[in-house]
Image 1 (tube, rainbow, N blue to C red):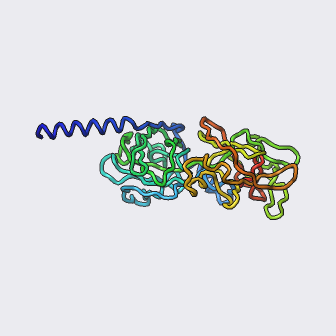
Image 2: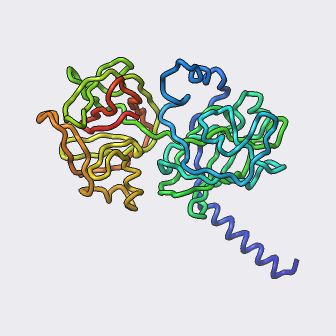
Image 3: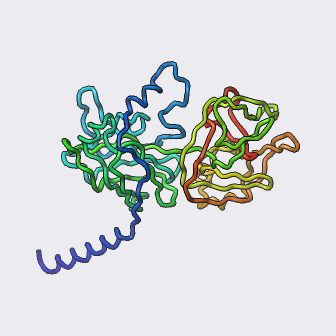
Amino acid sequence: MNQLSIILLIILSSIYNLYNAQIPTIYTRGGESRVNWDEIMSEYEDPNYDGPPFWDSCIDAPSYIKASSTLSPQGKYNYSVDNLTDFDPRTPWVEGKEDYGIGEYIDLELPYGSDNIKILNGYQRSYSSWKNNSRVKTIKVYANKKAICYVELKDKMGSQYFDLPENDFQRIRFVIVDVYKGDKWKDVAISEILQTACCFNSNTTILNIKNNLSINQINNGDEIAYLDLKTDKINVSKVAYTAKQIHHTLLKISTKDHNVELTPSHPLYIKGYGQTSLYALKRKNNWSNYQDMLNQIEILVWNNDKQKSEYQKLIGIEKINGEFETHTILKLEKGTNYIANGFVTVVY
């Protein structure tokens, strides 16, 4: 190598290091030492079970997913990238390279943006499967072909969560940068990539005919109010299933008479759009931020004094960060909506 080539290499290396030094590193939350998924899943595989459809509530899968490589099927087991979105932690995607999969990637589109991504790292069929196969330690995240951050995962079973830097991504790419080596095999596995979506902050009040209830106090069997959208009358239904999650990003929204704190992906009734979330509406209209919605949209609320529903303009919206215990109602015995701090929302 001549002197000019060496100088160019040094310059390029310096530029590369400077570029990567500016990329933030995100650290995951959660994870467990051991998880027996056979025991957990057995309840949901009972043909008589009539509860929430998944082993974890309020989760959704990427709307698009593709991998750079996949390990060939081994006997009755396959390692397709579709396993990442099948809601079964026992079925992983495994990359198809002969070494530790460094540089292999997953392309995906998240339905609810960059918040509260859930990843189940490694081959979680059993603890021995998890230990024997390699797990991801570090991924590099790209959006629009630009590196935006690193994500450092824990070497743990169970669910880990992280939020990407603020942005609206059509599609993102997770590239394997480093791994935790398996006890027996180099194959690198991930069992699920999902997203927790719904929920209201625990300080939300739910309308009831007799006395209003805080959403964090509602149990299966409690009676709450729902709105008959055809007759515009309030009826009563028993709660069938509830759920709670930890979220780290909420929107605090307000109209002239009401305010509430909810996840960006939780659906409301928006005039001219029907049932949709503020996040989906922002993307649909190509608004650069949530403030663009102010005085532009009207949200369905319940006027308790007049005993009728009405649309009110969105006059306040603020993104708040922290650690929030959030709750939602997944199912009612009858009816498909309920009233949260005056806002008409849907079971989810």
